[in-house]
Image 1: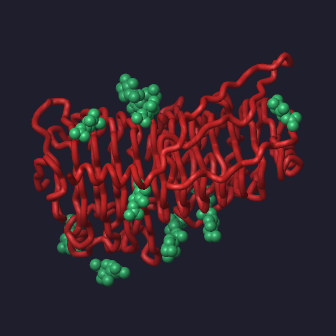
Image 2: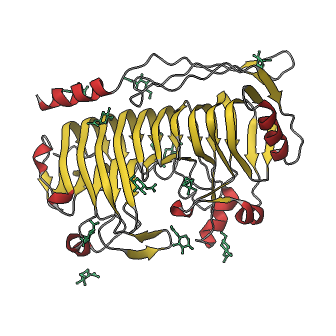
Image 3: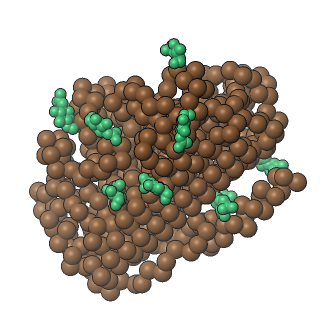
Length: 444
Ligand SMILES: *[C@@H]1O[C@H](CO)[C@@H](O)[C@H](O)[C@H]1NC(C)=O
Ligand SMILES: *[C@@H]1O[C@H](CO)[C@@H](O)[C@H](O)[C@H]1NC(C)=O
Ligand SMILES: *[C@@H]1O[C@H](CO)[C@@H](O)[C@H](O)[C@H]1NC(C)=O
Ligand SMILES: *[C@@H]1O[C@H](CO)[C@@H](O)[C@H](O)[C@H]1NC(C)=O
Ligand SMILES: *[C@@H]1O[C@H](CO)[C@@H](O)[C@H](O)[C@H]1NC(C)=O
Ligand SMILES: *[C@@H]1O[C@H](CO)[C@@H](O)[C@H](O)[C@H]1NC(C)=O
Ligand SMILES: *[C@@H]1O[C@H](CO)[C@@H](O)[C@H](O)[C@H]1NC(C)=O
Ligand SMILES: *[C@@H]1O[C@H](CO)[C@@H](O)[C@H](O)[C@H]1NC(C)=O
Ligand SMILES: *[C@@H]1O[C@H](CO)[C@@H](O)[C@H](O)[C@H]1NC(C)=O
Ligand SMILES: *[C@@H]1O[C@H](CO)[C@@H](O)[C@H](O)[C@H]1NC(C)=O
Ligand SMILES: *[C@@H]1O[C@H](CO)[C@@H](O)[C@H](O)[C@H]1NC(C)=O
Ligand SMILES: *[C@@H]1O[C@H](CO)[C@@H](O)[C@H](O)[C@H]1NC(C)=O
């Protein structure tokens, strides 16, 4: 009965749209690869509303590769083809200068070539864009209205992260750029692109709305001894109506993370490997801020070799310092109406983790100072697979700081075991666990 009502609630609320068509790049007689805008739609779910119409473009601006820094030529082409054209990037480009691309309006970017950012750390740390949020920085920022960026499965954006990861290993305050930042993008799509070796997070979707992201591959590979740190797939921030779908991610931090003020977001058809899961948060890090994550639907994804499958992490109600990148707590706000449905888990340490004590090792402090973030109306539905042996036979952990701060947490049809095959146990405490169907809860 309850299960049925949840399913009805989810499917009634999300309008299904038509099936995606896969674009194919073709090589012309001149040897150049050219493609038109692909017909990819949000599928099977959209974010509760249709994406805005995007008129056909009527002009092309092709950028020749110079052999040196191509930033100025790309910027010029975007000005020339703005308001109704397509910038064609079909060669191998280098970008060694910051680019503010927040002026875009009704323009497409057809990237069938490759863009590589220089690894001139000294230049970038002195010139990269800075954002207050988590001290993040970027090579470029892209925003405006009605912008489609497509790569037909062949376009590449290369962050040349190796030197950055090596430098970060000896300088923890190094501000490494995020590979792709949308800052104020309203209406548009990013599809068919292969993103490799970001110095930091791969994508930050900020201050944006009505954006479809589809058919992306993300790969990170260190050729040295250092590991690539903080290579999140997508982080959403101050954004509404975003769909991230049908992509393959091999990375080392969150596959997708919903940061403060992420609302009406759908994540579907992802195959994530080696990450920290599809995560809400962390939230409540900054004392003076109010964080909202609401109406999130995570459907039909697979997660392998990760620390977590589904994860919700918020800071406790006390501020503390543990490391330059791990300090905070005491921020208020709420996490509400989050559904994870149809989730294949393989070799993840926890299939589900809910944590209201993030960033604080002293658990007593979390009980004394319950999180100022509430978590409510959470649904984990139809999970299957196996965890790693790390906590076997424990397969998940849901620990809240007080029942007032965690309400209406539900799990149904969860078929997860450890590799031993022993009867699975769940660590569940600090809230009313009656919504966790079939869970054998233990206290630690
Ligand atoms: C722009 O280039 C694409 C790909 O080569 C081509 O299909 C399209 O017809 C061109 N559009 C215009 C307006 O020239
Ligand atoms: C988003 O908008 C806020 C408020 O205008 C601004 O401070 C911030 O720099 C913008 N971009 C990012 C990535 O946060
Ligand atoms: C940004 O970095 C500086 C210097 O490391 C640090 O003092 C500050 O707390 C950081 N801010 C945030 C929001 O993380
Ligand atoms: C670490 O990197 C920052 C730039 O992000 C720089 O200002 C600082 O001088 C570097 N520290 C060392 C010890 O190199
Ligand atoms: C689930 O996602 C996969 C891609 O990972 C896709 O092939 C499949 O059609 C999707 N299934 C449903 C029911 O949406
Ligand atoms: C998947 O992640 C594991 C563990 O991080 C890694 O060893 C493996 O190479 C990854 N697979 C692919 C296809 O990248
Ligand atoms: C998030 O939204 C709330 C409510 O509108 C607002 O108070 C808060 O400042 C926003 N946070 C950010 C980071 O924009
Ligand atoms: C809950 O979130 C879903 C998306 O997951 C949305 O369709 C639905 O309208 C939301 N429910 C409420 C009561 O806002
Ligand atoms: C998980 O990791 C194992 C061992 O590294 C690897 O063989 C497997 O392909 C990975 N799974 C995925 C989906 O990449
Ligand atoms: C944890 O915090 C409590 C309350 O402040 C304190 O009494 C205790 O000593 C702390 N434990 C550790 C290991 O620091
Ligand atoms: C935040 O938590 C602290 C400690 O529990 C409490 O004293 C304070 O009133 C809370 N503030 C808000 C805004 O909820
Ligand atoms: C339970 O989840 C599995 C895996 O998604 C699905 O095949 C099955 O139909 C679900 N069972 C019920 C009763 O919903």
